[in-house]
Image 1: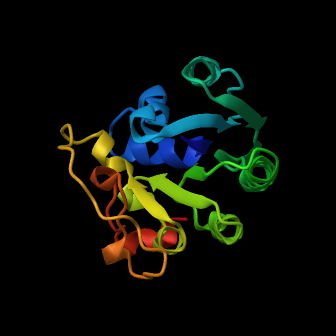
Image 2 (image 1 turned 90 degrees about the vertical axis):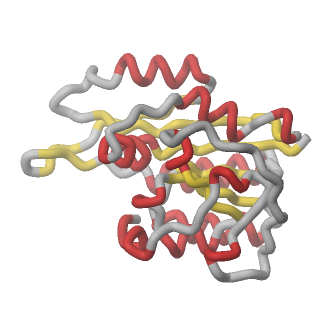
Length: 200
C-alpha cells in the first residue's frame, strides 16, 4: 500500500466550486484520493479553512463536516481588507507539508490547490523522491504548478457524469509537457488551460 497525505486548500477549491455552481463532497474526495482498491491508504489529511472576521461562526458547520470526513482542520481568522478580508495559509500549509513529509515519510502527497505559490514545496518534495499530485478545477489550476507536479487531478470530473474507468499509461516524470501528463487515475487528469496559469 502506498501511504497518502492530503492537504486541502479549502478557500482555493471552494472559490472554484462556487464559480462552477457546484458543491464538493469533501469526504468522497478524500476517499477517492486514498482509494484502497488502487493500493493507496490515507496516512493523514489536513484542511485549511479561513475565517471571515465579520462572521466568525459562519464556517462552524463546514468545519464540523470536514472533521467528520476525516480531515484535521486548521482555521485562522483573517483580517479586514476593505469590503472583504484576507487570510493566507501558504506559510502554514508549506510548513505542515514539509513536516509531514519528513516525519511520516508518505509515498504520495496530494495538494488540493491550484495555487502556484506551492510550486517550491512541490519541487522540494519531488527532490526527496516523494510523488506529488496536485488536484484542482481546471480553471483554477496554475499551469506551472501542474507541470512541476508528478500528476494533475482534474476536479472537473467531480461535477461531470460518472467517469468510465480506463487504463492509463504511468506518468513519465521526464516529460515536461502537459499534453502528456498521464498516470493511473486518468479519468481525473487533463492539462489545465493556458488561462489558468495566472490564477495561482
